[in-house]
Length: 443
Ligand SMILES: [Zn+2]
Image (cartoon, rainbow, N blue to C red; front, side):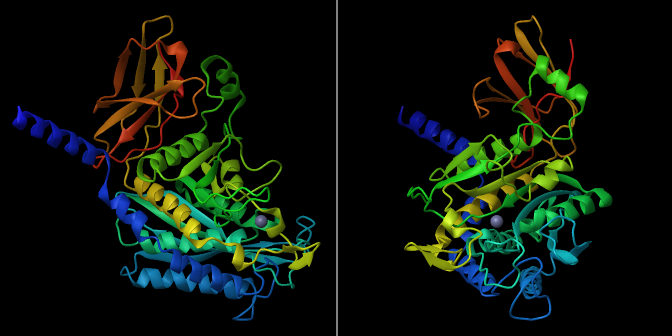
């Protein structure tokens, strides 16, 4: 009896370890709040990083800031025998492109690419913004430390590169510093176009914009809450796809939403102390961020950010008014929290970069039948596939079944009308692709 119990314990311990990967815990532990603090401080000390600011000085302005960011990526690369390809991507934006571009400007992004060993042309991206602003978006001379918006996201991206460059991945990872965000998302526009021109297969982008503030303007304080913004369906969908949704569903199941669910699930599994909040919208009400140009180009993209914003500390001239200290200064950044959100990014970059591609076609059947049926296209490198389903009102994939290395399956006893479904590919180490919502039907 005793021996039987031991065996049962051993087996359950084995299944537990099989579901989790120690490397993911190592990645979480390797993220350093201290290094993020140093980087945010360095970035804030460039005085201003406004997109139109000085590019000649080595101590002030966006030119100095981007050269420093590039040199940090190069340092990281030197420590991994040149595992990162570091370069600038630039576009000239002409005066008058909108009313925030008051002179011609080169919008310069900094990229560090860690090539995948098996799928080098598939990219998962983490981004932060380089640029900052004060109250007047065209004021490119006054002090604009942008400590939280968005030195925090930029520092997190530099740190994720340091941590993940110690590993090799099957898919490519890009760590990206983007410019021109505050002037109208110009950097993201430029790089999304660049990715299209190069034929890059973008798995998705994690846009990190403000990941360091834990005290909201309403007084709420939390160092575990954070938000994952994702749009419901891509803006690039066709009229035919839109019409099909009325009959087959998919109103809340676009590619960006699946990426958001992926991050949510992974965080719940590996960082249960955190509280990821799935927000069912592209971005904050009426406001924007650098994942949007990627969404516009048809790529999956989400925004990861703090849950409790403080508007007196964003886009403000540094001043005291009615006893309130305005300005996006260093003192308001919580570096431990920024490190946690950096870890959120890093574990999801790693999980996706270690996973096989998702099936490109997933067909569903089972109309007026007692079972739901699936067919999908197999992918190179998958050891098997997982069918997911959930109640139609649930935001998360609550039920799943691993079905092995097959390309079709019948889920007996599950009536198609009462759930939403999807399929993911599972790699040899258990890492999974994002879930694919069915994009076809069969009888
Ligand atoms: Zn901003």
